[in-house]
Amino acid sequence: MSVDYVIVSKPDYITLTCPHCDEELEINFREIDFNTDYWDDGAWVTCPYCEQEIELGDYEYE
Image 1 (cartoon, rainbow, N blue to C red):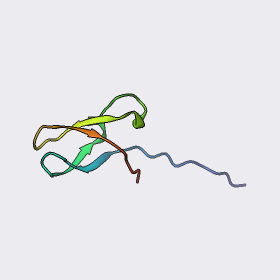
Image 2: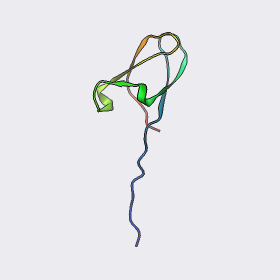
Image 3: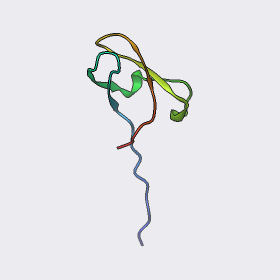
């Protein structure tokens, strides 16, 4: 007898382009400042190159 199962994935990092300095960024997921525990409520990161705050908008989950 076989059963269905769920593969649980854990986010590791995000990629984005800084809107202030145009650098391509890879940010560790633990470094994201989420407004709440729900990802759709918004979040912020700091660019390591120009040190500007970046507001995160829509996302794609791969």
